[in-house]
Length: 117
Image 1 (cartoon, rainbow, N blue to C red):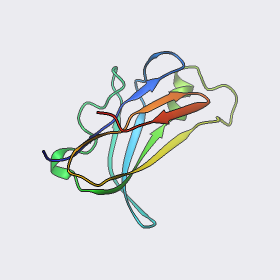
Image 2 (cartoon, one colour):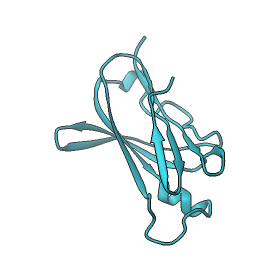
Image 3 (tube, helix red, strand yellow):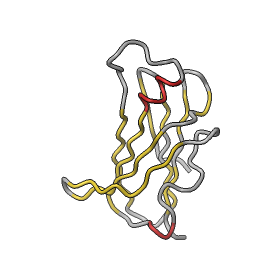
Image 4 (cartoon, rainbow, N blue to C red):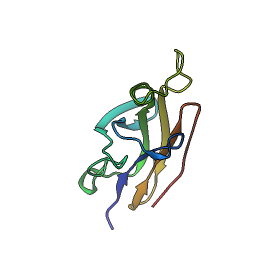
């Protein structure tokens, strides 16, 4: 199977998908970052298409940046400025031609991720 990358964002503080989160994907090589995709989550907290589809997939090092602060402000969860969490970067490697799923579980004061399916 050709590889591809998907993601989604869940708002664990409110117990729902996080709609409207901007996500940027970078390919990382040494100290350089090359932006290769930018999307916004839909009502299900997912992107409408894979953030890295089959035809663009290459193994290597990547970084997803979730603009959590904009979402937290828009959803009334921001509290006082500066926010504890604003941009959330997740750097990961994809070594195989496979489906990688890298979700973000988000609250105003914490987050987690994992390799999903």
